[in-house]
Every structure is written in C-alpha cells, then in structure tokens.
Image 1 (cartoon, rainbow, N blue to C red):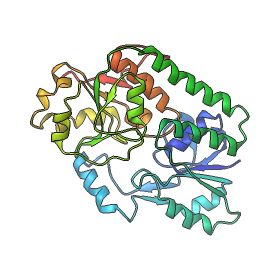
Image 2: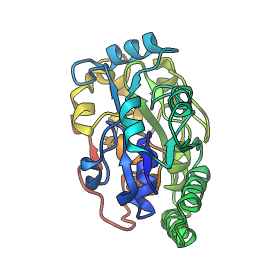
Image 3: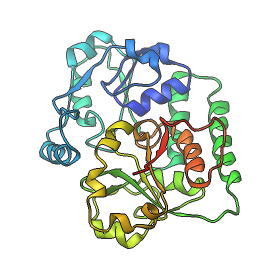
Image 4: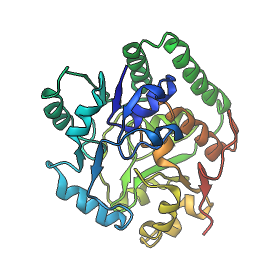
Length: 301
C-alpha cells in the first residue's frame, strides 16, 4: 500500500506498525524514524520558526488562523499516487487542514482513501494505532498495541503508593500555554498530579498568575515543535516573569526541559515513552530504557 502521511504522529504510527517502507510522502516536520528522511516531502510552510521568538511565532500563527499555516504540493501528491492519506482535523496549527486535503484529493485520479486521526487521550492514541493497523492489514497490530499498554502499566506500577508531586506542564512559553489532551494523563500515570489542564482538554493560553497560584512542585517545559536546545535558549520568556524564582519547583530545582516533539506534542505511540521519561523526572525511577539528557534535562540556572 502506498501511504502519504500529512501528520508526524501518523508517521510515528506507521513506523510503530513496521510499515515505513510503504510511505511515499510525508510532511516537512516528520523526523522519526531516521529512515523517513528519504521519503518525498509534500508540505511546506512560510513560517520561519528558527528566526522568530516564541511570542513572534504565536503572533504569526494567530495571523494565519483561517488561512492555514501549511502548503500542500498537490502536483507531487498526485504524482505519488497514494492509496491512503493520513491526516487530522484536531489542531489547525499542527498540520495541513483537513479541508485543504479534501479539496486536493477530490481531483486526484483513483481517489485515495483519506483518514483523519484525532485522538485527545492516551486510549484514543492507541485506538488510532489499531485503526491504522487494520487499514494496513498488519496482522500483529493487537500484539503491538498490547505491548504499548504493558509499558504504560509498568509505569503506573513503578510509582504506585508514592507521593504525587503537583506538576505544571507547559507546551508554549510566551504566551504561557498549558499542555492538555494526553499530557495530563502522561503526568498522572507517571505519579504526578497534573495542574492547569484536564485529560483530553484542548487548552488555551493562561495568565501568568494562574501558574503562580498553582504553586507547582515540578515544572515541565515541552514547547510544541521546539527542540530542547531551542527551549533552553528561550527560557528567559519564563525566568524573567515576576514570581518565577518563588515557585516551589524553581526553589527546589525541579524545572525540566523535555523533548516535546518526540514524546509529548504528537499523539502517536511515542507518548508511551513520554510517560517513561516522566517517571524518571518525577520519581527518579527507571522504567524500560534509561532516560537520556536529550529526552529530559534539569534546568540548573
């Protein structure tokens, strides 16, 4: 089957199912596994995130609401002749809009099937793996999903009965935007009490006062689409705010920069690894592979 993925999380799912070889097209943001680097890119954006600050990116995204941030190469998509196009309609700043995909696909010969993946919770993420596995005819999909569920169960077992620190997970620095959807579940499974957002919630920016009033024991920084090095470079957007130094998390040295794009921003199977990373961050416990500095690092200054 010839697959075009218009969502990094969908690419992750295809990889988890062992079908990377069937990918004939991907987004410019699909970066895992390394094998996808050779797959043709069918999307692009005029937004230069390397040059803009978090505040400037947020303003630019706001200016594009309704017009779309991403371009889809319709000619290349047609030439690739996909049987299946995986996309989403959950977040209008995460990928090419579902409406635009529909417009392009309607004029293609052969009429590829378009499937929209829109999980909001961990269970729904795993359901998406099952759904794509069924579409691709992957015989051992059930076993693969069961293995992911077993890993989540191991995370919960590792912290059973432990005190639960209060955790603020932040997915954008300026403005301050709490992480919602599946992230509060990741925090809870890893033995923390999530603040500022509920499981499955599509969040919006909050006033800085909300963070101060929450008095988190741990602050997790996981900006959407930004690598840890970029997050570290922009820490001033938070550390310069009044009251930052008085937060319990800051006073106790429990501020962490995480790899958001890999394990927290994308609703794919790697959210399971995100929960394993959080067990290390919140409780110093290792579940599965040891946590590398590239996955989580403590802010020391």
